[in-house]
Image (tube, rainbow, N blue to C red):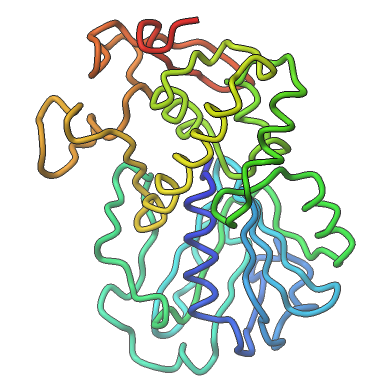
Length: 294
């Protein structure tokens, strides 16, 4: 599932392409039935909170998108392409779509570890986007959007202070590894950042939230911001330090981008202990039992 870095990246790209302009919207296969509420209206702004996108077309016309596990965007310049696949929604700028296609006419972002951010169309040249496979793609009222925001915890990428995060964690007896996956605790942090932030803090994922030192929680929050911002440059999440990578400095190899995420059964880069895996909060948790002792 895309984490907060990717959602905020899409928000920035789509805002650069469409905000302040009249936008065409349709669901060419009948899979999005509210297009008439948005089609031809000016897109005021694009909002990102945690793993949620909100396209603000005015009062009670907020297009809510949650990509879920399967959702993804295709984007391009020039004329709209032929409809292919299970296309949920298209959004385009009519004037821009009449212009010749820019180099790299369309681009479907690949899985985060395969996408180094190169070859993408400049956001201001994007004429159209296509959405496939989202968990949700519906028009929200202002009340629905605000209700969603109240359910979500603070978001590092929105500049939120750590105070609310610290307070919520300290009220809970659940393990910190589970709390970091709870979007009501910290919006936007997902399975990759959970594993990597805990490792970088040398914190066991099994310690109860109430028992984690405040300075440790604040350090995790502070660490999350630059890591997630770096992940917005491209969709690749890199959390390892050059000194800890077996190959040393230079281009970050795919297998050296993370300390523990999906490294189960392999030696820890720091201490050599076998990285472990266990289900927690419905997802696989990865940790080093030596670097992150209970």
